[in-house]
Length: 350
Ligand SMILES: [Zn+2]
Ligand SMILES: [Zn+2]
Image (tube, rainbow, N blue to C red; front, side):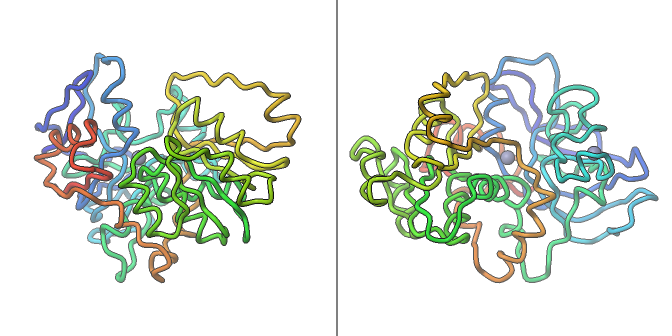
């Protein structure tokens, strides 16, 4: 079959790879119908060249093609989406909805349980093997389209997790730093949870105009001071909570500084290899601030968010800017990486 294969630093190709097969009785093989390029794929794309080749992609859905003998919840032909991280479903951490720390999957090293690696070839391909199918696969209801379901695999749960970790509550003033795909979903999630005001922060005025249309208070920090605006909106206190969806040490500090005494801060941006110097006493301890971060467990959030899509409370397709065939995917990476054509999200069809 064909797949987008990582071959080194900024070196991808659309090429032939072996067809996936059932290797364990709890596996399923899924024929891919839709797959997306994620911001975290770009970390691999830009990262130091690794001396290995593997199929990329951790955001994908499709149709069950084959199941192992132990798979109870799925059968051939069903339309399904797949969690980007893989949990066994039966260890202590999986029992606590911490599939990202699955004790079976992480046994061979850190973060080995995300699709798109040597160990778990990804879904930017015509098909994929899914370990522990009963835990990591979810049926797509008839009234939900593939494009509506696709972002449940990673970035919609990630955005919602930001609002969850920041404990966004009715009436809150919430700051979301970043209007990329994850930031958009954090904004929508904050609104769904009853925030009175969501201040959407970005340097791109086009993205800010879209934020305004979805009900946010747009703010370009090159034109307005975030802290001043947040205080003006809250009687001088500061925001109730903030969500950092960029992955930059400076914006993490802004997210901390913008909240009130007792505020909650969630960092969902990916700070790959970047240290964040924090003056704990002055900015956290002294202000009784809660700071949280984590990798998403879609298996926990998918059953909560799918009904929101079914009932039309949230339309994840608004972020899609580019649709192309998987064979054009290497060019899709270039467009996404170079921020060409106002790209926000690239979706590919094999
Ligand atoms: Zn992703
Ligand atoms: Zn586990």
